[in-house]
Length: 331
Image (cartoon, rainbow, N blue to C red; front, side, top):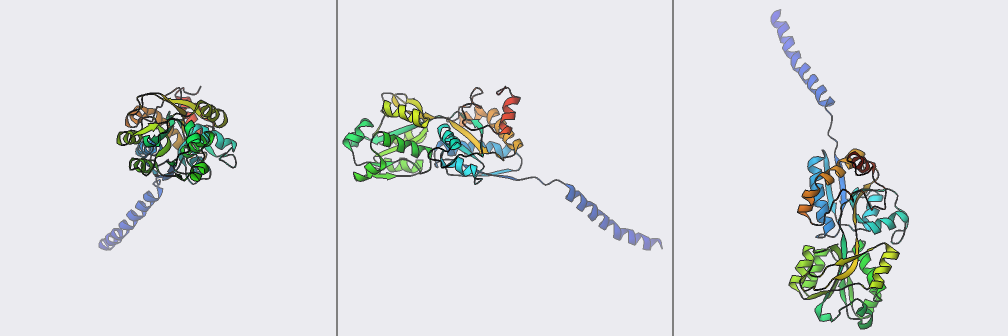
């Protein structure tokens, strides 16, 4: 009898164990995955490498975060984030100002974008022309009307729009260039620099970090001249489109002896308004606490306490605002 009872008990024990194990597994919380699409800029440009550096830190410190970085631009990034095709990215302050007001190039106000941090990156418009063109100023374009083969960057980027506006205001528009037998091309940053080095272009206009490696590579490989925008055009870009007057100091590039006058913009890291507050709080915290490491790795970053929550034309995300209040940046 005891042998029979023991056999029954031994048969039941595995069933009890499996049942208990299934209960434990069922009750164990599943780790939530947060998939983020990040819109950057032209491949090889500062937006792209800055996003890569930030999201490398985020993914190591925010549990469950996975991400993919795709090319974009200052103008198209707010649109992609606003309609939910992406969740995070960069844009310039003046483009964001147009976005929330529905001004050109935006057809209507973008209401679902929020600021996370001003990362301190100031991009300046660079206008390089081949020495063989014989052009020494932007004003000469209208008078000389050279056969320009110019690359102004990918369409839909703030850089391309800034270049187009500068050409228009100097009296040598895209259509004027084509009418004189020239070409207007729209390439990624690295590709346009390579094309100019190879002689396929005789001009490029691009908005990026002063002293960016690809600019330095260009001036060390080919005889080019960096042109100033006219004072009148700078004033109009400022008053009509929100650009800030800027200077590229003499000596920044090989062969550049004098200051070059241009325009610049600051950069905002932004997100969709529906991003979880706890995630954006962590992102803002990680950006601020890792600012020295980010700035050591990439010169474009210039994150400062007095600026990180300032100068944004769009509302702050509640998660970011909560962090800045916790550390006393926002009172």
